[in-house]
Amino acid sequence: MAKPSFLYIDGSKDVPSSVIKLGESIMQKTGIKEGDAVKISTGNKHAILWVRKSNEQNMARANSNLLNLLFKEERGIVKITKTTLKESKYVELKLLENSDINVLDAKRSLIFTPVVENGYIVVFIGENTRPLNFKVQRVYPSPSFITTTTQIFFS
Image (cartoon, rainbow, N blue to C red; front, side, top):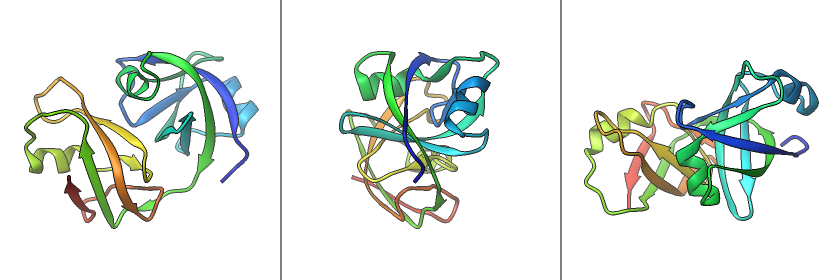
């Protein structure tokens, strides 16, 4: 992993749940480029996100639902570290609230989602506009991203 940086991040419902949007000046300062994967951490909670370029020079934005899960707020300071991902072979996810999910729809919605062991992800499944929050119980290798061949288990 690369050297971590700290940055202030804002939440937005317009940002996909597996993406962080970074302004060009932030990318230059951190050495992070569009298409990279990064780990964001606050305390003992973390997530892996794909980097996309923002039109706002000095802004960092992520999905507000994910930030609420990590911070209990829609903004805060995170440690951000560039990371390398491989394809997930196996992922075990724990749904953090009681909800019925269609397993097939859930698996389709998870394709290309980056995961890290003991990390968090937010997924929007099918027509359901309410986000589903998961804790990643186990993943091999860690960190990685889910593909069509990944074995996904729900606990």
